[in-house]
Length: 110
Image 1: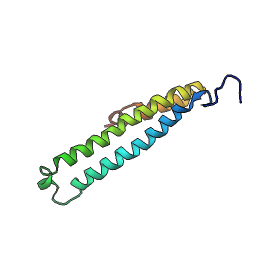
Image 2: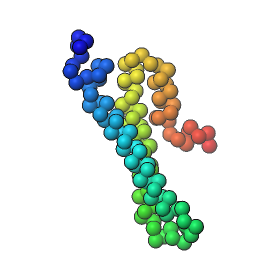
Image 3: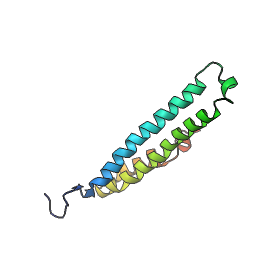
């Protein structure tokens, strides 16, 4: 084991950072997947406009869950940034800032 590295560390970072990062990846899949399923269940029917008032809560809950995925993406970027910076990957840090921390509306060019 390298000198100055604790037993529960990987590349100088605590293992808990990697566990949180993995949990954020899983949370992103779950939030977006469940949200997409809820929104599609309401919006996928041919009589979407006539049923929207009755299924308003389902639609809003699905949209909120899909939006939470953006917050999870920012969390992943915040955890990744110091790791990449510590490894001397300046290009990857700038790429991370552009793809994870910049809002989707700015990236789409609309």
